[in-house]
Image (cartoon, rainbow, N blue to C red; front, top):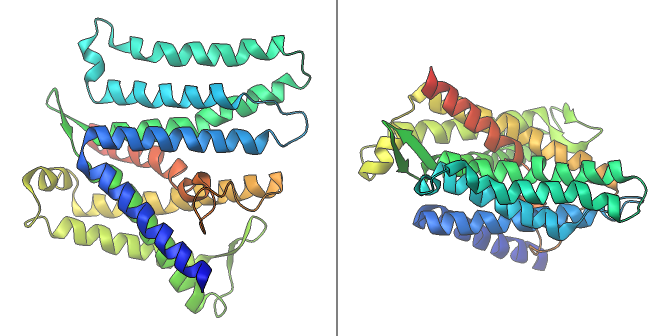
Length: 295
C-alpha cells in the first residue's frame, strides 16, 4: 500500500512537471528536455559501464547530449538563424563526438570498439530522439515558425493512454486471451492489452480533433493542421512505436541483467524506464507528420 501511494505521488508529480514545462513556454520546454536527455544519457552510460570491458565516458556523453539537444532546439526554433552560419550551432556537438573517438586511443584500454559503439548508441538511441522533440515543437508555416506544444504533448498523451489501456485491458482479458506479444522479452505484455491501449489512444485522438471549438486559437490551428483520419494515424504510430520502444529497453535490460535503469523516480525506476517508449515514438511521429505536410 505504501509503495502504491509513493508510485501515485511520484507519477502525478512527474506528469504535472512534464505537462507544465511543455505548455508554459519554449524556455521551460527546452530546459526540461535538455535535463531529461542529459540524465537519461548519464543513466545509460552508468549501466553499460558495469559490463566487463566497457569504458564509456559518462560525462562527455552527457555533455554531447546537451549540446545536441540545444543545437536542434536553436536550429528548429529559428534562434540559430541569428548567426551568419546557422549550422554552426552543431559544431560543439561534433567536437565532443570527435573527442569521444580520439580519447579511447589514449586510455590504453582494450575493446575500444565496444566502448565506441556504446558511446554512439547513447547519442543515437537517447540524445537524438529528445533533440528531435524540438522539431515537433516548432511548426514550419509559410516561411515562419509557429511555436506550439500540441504535437510534443500529444506524443506523451498517446503513450500514457496506450500504457493505461494496455494495463487495464491486459489485466481484465489477458488470462482469458493468453496471447503474448513478445514472451521472451516481456512476458507480461499481451496482444489484447496492446490492442486495448491502441484503441484508447485512438479514441483520445478522435476526441481532440472533434472538439477544437473550445480551444485557444493557436492550439485550434495546430490541431486542425491534421484531419481526423490523420490524427487517428498519429495515435496508432505513437502506440506501435511506443510499444517497440518499451520492448527495446526491456531487451536491453534483460541482456544487461538489470531490473530498472535507475532509482531516481521513487516507485518508477529511472529516467529510461519512464521515457523508453518515447525514444522510438518521437522520431516515428516526426516522420509521420512531416510526411503528411510534405505530400
